[in-house]
Length: 545
Image (cartoon, rainbow, N blue to C red; front, side):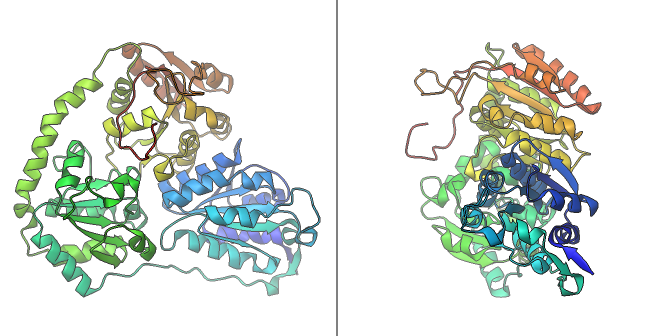
């Protein structure tokens, strides 16, 4: 009895646990898509393959399992690369499948022939080509396992057309068994050394990231922070491990805490530019650094590490908690917490006053305040843009782990709407709000159509400041885009649309839009904001922005 390659793909995807695929149709993957659908995979066709990869990334982050995207041969597959590069730098597990020209026609200038594998290797953690249909299940199982193992990331599998349509005997097909790969626990000696460093520290901090979410350790870390009183600061994607409005949270004292810390525990994240690579003056020159990561390369690449542990973050937290069980850590660190709380309390009134402005045009911080006060703690919040991304980071807290999405350390513009659609596909029971800059929204704006066609209602709010970034002196080339009526565009695509010019009208517009979303209709609120308002943030580059 025979079976064709595309049928094997459908069965193998189901065996790997895939339930949703983001794609655009085309040869040679059309029958592959039908086979996937017949095996229980939901098909969500998008308007640009870049968005398919981005939706798969958001799906992965929200569901904490690999997301799946597919591209047709040539341009269709190459269009996935921006989203895959973003997932690579952001350490998000995405499985990408690309149709390709037939193997037997390689080197003959076949239709859409290009070395897709060579293009994909720099933007994925693993990329391979299938040469025999009988090995398709083997390669797909490996792709899903590789995406999640060690440092999570995107993988790519090249599927030539003649392999997809090759017929093989079912007895020749090897179906691999599922394998769970877990990082190890830390050694007893390393735990003891880390515990001794913490016991000697007077001003420790924990820096964490989304690795905590992939290890399923968010609740354990939250309990550890509460028990020990060690201040926790996270990357944008790792926010919400502890509620950011809790008494033990010090977001306004973050710079002081990092600068004055004598011990820095870097847990399940990397020392990237987000943390200034751990360098002075962001951190004290005499501070000790302990780094815990499932990926040894992350530790090797760190510019300053005094103690490095390759370990599962959740197991490490449990081990360290046990080692500190008899140490009065919380009592000992009370002065450190009081110091940071005093800074927090001093800065908070001024920060809140900035949010309350009634200025016209609307200040982006006022828009952020209205959103902050409108959404509930369970809402998945996606933020994408330049000024609005930075303002949102400063002013809208997170209260639950894994419910804050943005472009991450690669800084890719245009992820917002695809992330929102992908998040809604992953968790249809959750409210999803996307806060977008107008420039970044334009990159993937047609994905509103995807949300409408697939019944994935989300609320999109645009900060319409007329172009890319703030520009008080009007000097930046190509900055101005005009004040596009995206609300009218949304209405033309079947969404609810609203246009807001005054701060007092923001909340009513949000309420009306949310009511429409509750009825199953995607909504967009287009808010005119001040083109002069520039958010202060860390300088990540040596050139002016």
